[in-house]
Length: 235
Image (cartoon, rainbow, N blue to C red; front, side, top):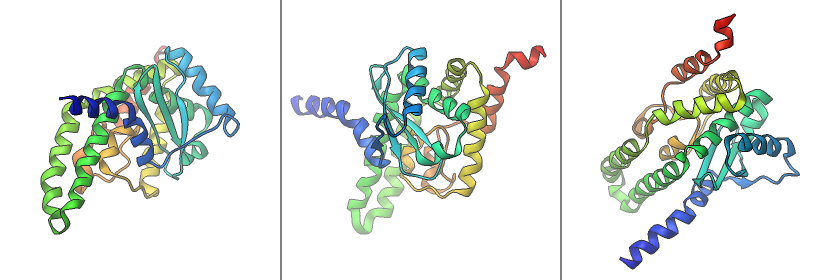
C-alpha cells in the first residue's frame, strides 16, 4: 500500500514533465519571447490563475497544449509553427483556450490520462513478435480509458471561456480554421494517445489514431464560437 501511494504521489508530481518530454518541449525564456510571455500573463490574470511556465515545441505544425496540476501549477507549450503562422489575435485565442483548460482543471485529468494511455501503448513494444497482437488488445483498452475520463464537452467549455477572456470569439475560431487547413498540409508524428492534449485533432482519423479522438469536429466548434458574437446579430 505504501509503495502504491508513493507511486501515485510521484506520478502526480512528474506527469507534466513526462508530457513535455513526449513532445520535446523546452522552456521558453522571457528574453526570447517577451510579447508571448506578456500575453500569457495578461490572460492568466483575467482567468484568475497563476501564470504558467512557457515552453516551445520544435514542430512546424501549429499546435499548443497545457499540462500540470491545476490553476496553481501549470505549464503551457506552443509550437514554433503556431508562433510563426498565427496573427496576434489568433495566437491570443489559442493561449486563452489552453488557459481555460487550466482554469477548469482539465489539465490534471488530461495529463494523467495521456501519460497512462501512452505508457500502455509503449508496453506493447516489449512483446517483440507479439507486438501487433498486444497493440490490438491494449490499444482499445487505453482508448476506452481515455474516452471514459475525457468528454468532448470540455472543449466547448474551454472555447466559450477563451472567447470571454479575449472579449471576442473570432480569434480562436480563425485559429481553429487555420489548424484544420494546416493538418492537411503538414505531416505530424506523435503518439496517438497525446490527442487529448492538443487544441484539435492533428492526426489522420485512421488506424490506432482513430481510437483516441476526443475532440469535436472543428466545423461545429467554429460555428458555436461565431454564434457567441452577439454584436453581429444586433447589427
